[in-house]
Length: 274
Image (tube, rainbow, N blue to C red; front, side):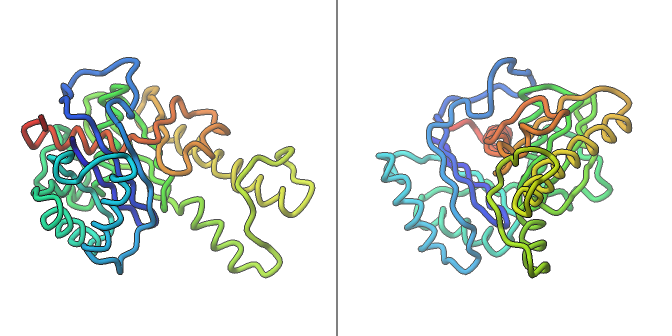
């Protein structure tokens, strides 16, 4: 089985995929990003954790699903936006899983031309999102990832990664609001009775949900205008299921899109796991 690890600034998402390989370059109509995903976990990213501590946590999580780290896992692929944790994850897989992990970064084959001015600046998760989105939905494509930052990425009709936009994420914005405004407090991110809030709590909820939904719709429309054509808009990330239902431009929600992209990148660079 293939172990897929996506290290973000706030959370680390881990997935285990069945061993059958995928055929790249052909849109899989009707298939979702969780195809072959047998187990998944979300844990806090803690830069101070050692390789042994992460190994202990992962072994415990796998054990809860009846998996043994040595007999079950035969390949590992990692993307990370936290350099210190990248090295920790590399040490963990080397020491505890007995495999050399594929670390997504410069030099890794993606099968997608990167038209960023400096391709090395593009986050591994953004490339994984773009590769996965095109595999499932074709191109042109816009991927919105609701993570620590909210990122927008565009793929041309020719399957080229064009670039995108990076905005403060929902949780970052909410935390900044309540930390700088003494009279405001954290609220649950659920829909209020209406867009016009009737209390402070409802007003914050409206600003968060409808405000970020409006940002998503507005950016998607601007991306489409610059692309010069209609494009599928796919939402992913930890808060996609919260915000996307209030968006008009989002065509599909794929919570495991990044993991699917990492799986595809692994198979593009290694012989498929058997």
